[in-house]
Image (cartoon, rainbow, N blue to C red; front, top):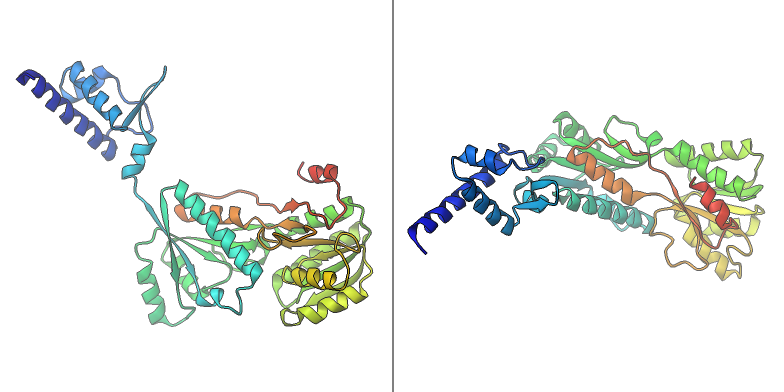
Length: 366
């Protein structure tokens, strides 16, 4: 190989390196088509042939890609190589993982939120750290926690956890996203992703009415929780407006689920058991089968829960699914810095415990 060719190849490599440097610095707009040969030759003061050779090498190295009848563009895969990774943290208290509080439904909710966040982070060049923080109002501990979050770009938290730390994060101006079940139960100004409780209860009530039920046994948690109290009030209001009788209403405390379920199965006269307290439903299902009763045959049953909670039940349970996977994805986007305006809704999962037909199920999503 003669000296002229060697010099030309070295020059093309230099031009290629300068093109890459200009892409990284923003001098060449990576979102637009690459300038033509003549423009690049003038920019780097070289011949067209040198530019063509430089671009050929960049294409071989997957830095650029040619699109038919469109031009030459920076490869999206290459851009990811030097794009800044967004550092996110999912911050949680120890009590959220304790044996006392980590029941099957909480585990299902957490699992779906985590998977949603991880899925979205992978698509947005972000990395999530899971950080345990002590639930404390002590100023020294809060200072230490904020130091741990110093290099974090965005933070995700669940519900009403870690209130003192949440206040500090907001005061520091860091991006924060809270995953809540329902907007109406949020009592602070922190940005959050959640469903509309009013709309959710209206959709459940509409399903009951459209399915032809005219008497309901309503099962809920203790009314000492705001979300349970509001659920009950809103659903009762809708059922009353449609002249659907609530033959019995049970508010079941977490510590008394089993004896309460035995009483419900013995006393209830409604066509449909509408269970808003997720923890009650697995016990009710088991007790009914032990007593020789089959949900969907001896009484109809409708639940409300995360997607994992009612998996592998037979007969399969009809329920409204809370979209925690989508909420996790949205919280991740919000922590990255995107504005989220999505209107989340319950999804009806058709099982064998209600008499709704396929035609009615399709109408609910129109």
